[in-house]
Image 1: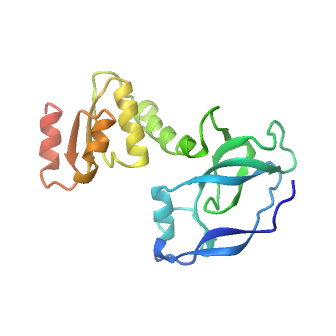
Image 2 (image 1 turned 135 degrees about the horizontal axis):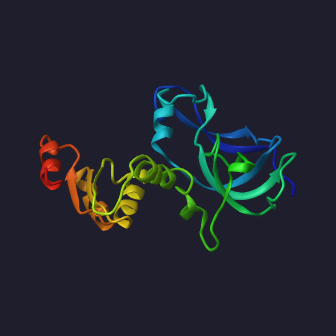
Length: 211
């Protein structure tokens, strides 16, 4: 397969925030190194880390200027040396650097196949939001049926996953979000949805958790 040498991409040009993202049309298409694969990006996730990174708040983030984004799904178009078991055309999702572009390099060992029948957009969150929520609730939090769990930012990607997982495991879910997002959170199965900006939030949580 013949690949272009340049591509469109969103470049972050400062540490002043996402308003300094700029569309460029001459970014070089990356070349996969040993143990890496190159995907043609079909969908990219926008996460809190993306925003914090534009302000230099995330540890280990690339210095500007850099191609933004880190979570993407797409078809494999090239593989680097030492890569086996990954076929060209396979639809995968993973994390790396430069997701907001037409092409992106991923570590082959960490690329996850998109489930059969899923679109690339549907797979976003499989390697970021859902594993984060699961790790927080079960291995770290030890959540079991009958317990009560408080989930902040419940309308966000990780928050939504946490609400659904907590409900699945039989917990009573107290969720917080801004009022305009309450219906979204209720639809996920939260038992109580509170205003995240309320001055009485602590008292409300105390009441709904039975003290």
